[in-house]
Image 1 (spheres, protein in one colour):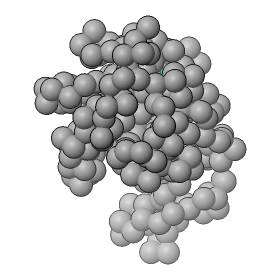
Image 2 (tube, rainbow, N blue to C red):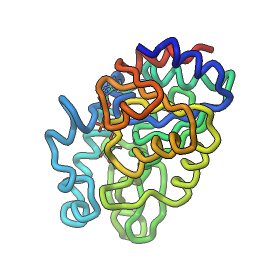
Image 3 (cartoon, rainbow, N blue to C red):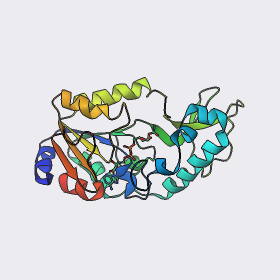
Amino acid sequence: MGIVEAREIIKGAKTISVLTGAGISAESGIPTFRGAGGLWGKYRPEELATPSAFARDPELVWRWYNWRRGIIVKANPNPGHIALARAEVSREVIIITQNIDGLHQKAGSKRVIEFHGSIWRVRCIECGCETENMEVPLKKIECECGGLLRPAVVWFGEPIPDQVLQASFEAIGECDVLLVVGTSAVVQPAASLAMLALDMLKKVIEVNLEATPISNVVDISIRGKAGEVLPQIICG
Ligand code: OAD
């Protein structure tokens, strides 16, 4: 339901912004955080994805990220990622992703804002230097300066970097339509981007397997798999 209307709206849009969450990568074999089989069912976020967890036991936190690196390195973009990358051929597309897996870029998307950082970057907690690192597992967790390396991702309790927030607000301001794909829309501030778009009178289309807190307020909410719905609503 809503596929035909969504396709018409997207066809008429010059600029599309897209907020994606773990659900868009589920069909690539990467577990989501919430819901059946979600990562937070098995692990406690405060034991793994917080600065204090890292201070207490960096090896444990790295074991978890190395496990996730092992899954992500084998994953390929699915038809959902590919439909979004192809959409760039005939219009401006800006992707704001909460995912740290790099699959939008692997699919060929050019304008990707990594809202929660990237699992393929590391940052020294002493000197702050940040580098790309694709090792699986990470070979050593010490930086040249002697400080510890951490994943360059946003953890619970940490702010989104200012320039990332700014770029995301601009992406909402610039677009005619915001697609919200595969996110439970409960983690802030990412979820508030959808509300911002509605406040700015943008069309908002949600694609999700299930209802979320924003399903009742968006213009169109489509229940289905991202990999099946996106190729149908984004044509050309
Ligand atoms: P969640 O795991 O919270 O939500 C995944 C959403 O995707 C759910 O609403 C599912 O119904 C939906 N879904 C699952 N499979 C799908 C499919 N094939 N097609 C469409 N939808 C599907 O993931 P996020 O919303 O991304 O943050 O979570 C937000 C943040 O919470 C993450 O970035 C992470 C986590 O804690 C940090 O680590 C900072």
